[in-house]
Image (cartoon, rainbow, N blue to C red; front, side, top):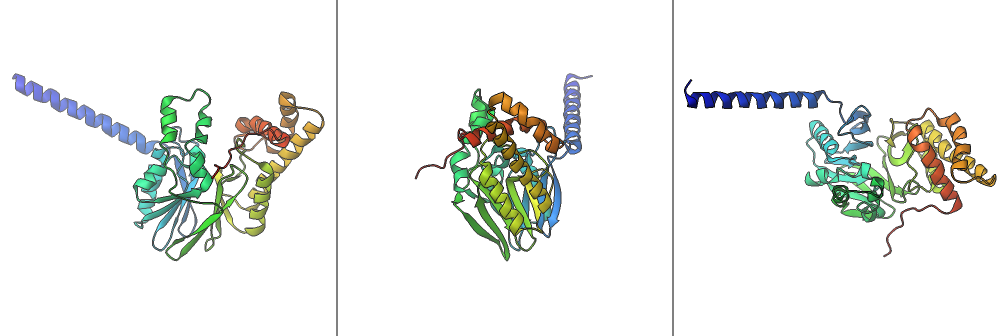
Length: 324
């Protein structure tokens, strides 16, 4: 075989091998579990529920979107940009209307990491004013004391909201109204979105559906009061939680019961003179008896008891609003 023909053959075989690898990779990506599962919860209203089966590129939290008459609003953007890109693609398959707004329900990394994806698509990011102050600072604590340079850079590059509010804002997607209001409890900068014409409430992490919550920033007394308001004012609504499946008012009431029971059990143990690991060990069986089947129990039960103990003693560190 002449040298030039041999070289051409080798090059052609190389191209075929690369094509085969690319095809196999694309097939694997197509067959991989999706980062979230999309549910239509009302006319033009969709909930993107985190898919635990997605081991890589997982959403990490719930999100959603509302299609109006002239534009689209997105609620939260997951814990990584890849999942946010999938959400953007899914929205584009359902409507060609512009994505006008993204509302971050709070600052935690698993709800804001895809902001830049939507900002690049033309959306304006909104959130309660503390979200902008805490997003690139408080999120570093989730990586522990040995946070790497790459992790620090990632947090410091998160897309910030360009419009903030203190108590809330009402947004219009053409003729469709979305009411956004801030409530205390989970972080001190939480927002709830209500779509009146569909009777749907996106709660962010103020509601976890049959799942134990992360209480690292929580103030549970006002949180219980916030849940009381949700139950009182939206008894027939569909609730999209920050984590867990779509729920209804009884599910919100169940979650309120968890926080209330946790406070009562920890307070009783404190009154008995217990503290530290002894208190955790005394409260854990009580909580497990009622809530041991809930998702993330093994992960959050002991920390929840610990943080509630600190809160009731007045010793808990929570993020503070910036001084003007």
